[in-house]
Image (cartoon, rainbow, N blue to C red):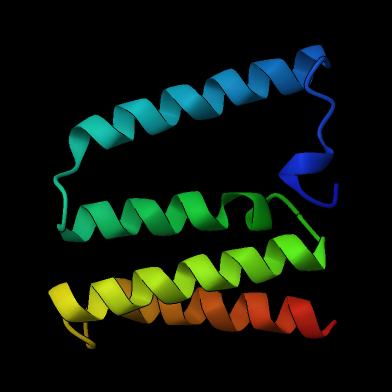
Length: 102
């Protein structure tokens, strides 16, 4: 698939997958506190989810790179530049940039 926008929202598998994803997000959102390491780790997981699933659309990947950049700014401000989440976010940004170059 190219991006989440390319899904057929009437497809029963897509409906089931979206329900599962939404349920996962709800549970995770209840577990983590705002501005905590867990919160930013969850944002990273959400932002990279469809990239991990194989999204290839350049516009979508540019959006993901932008989201990661915004989150990185917040992570560095709140948790510090040497935090594990900052390092992981930088690694994912590099990964997305390589996908954009391909």
